[in-house]
Image 1 (cartoon, rainbow, N blue to C red):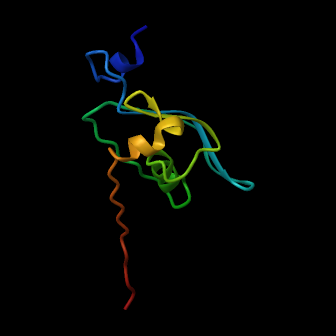
Image 2: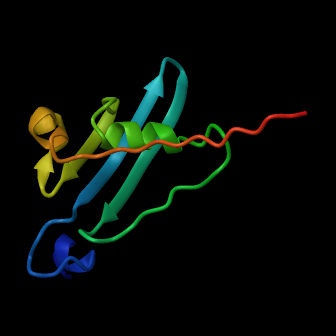
Length: 104
């Protein structure tokens, strides 16, 4: 079986740019993320889409270290986000857009 970095297509033995393993995020009794697994190789693009309340924004906030997962791990370039969030945050950029419609 190929190593995780080879399976993700990043080649050269590099770890995935983003690796999410069994991430869960709960707000009280409301579970927003349940066992999310995800790998994104360096240079790849990822689009998240789904209905309102599906957990898209929560997942982005967890990966960007703006929220902590209730369980599971997030790694950026092989480094555990839980242990190196401050250092890794220097390399992150996040742009959030919201589509607004006005009824007339």
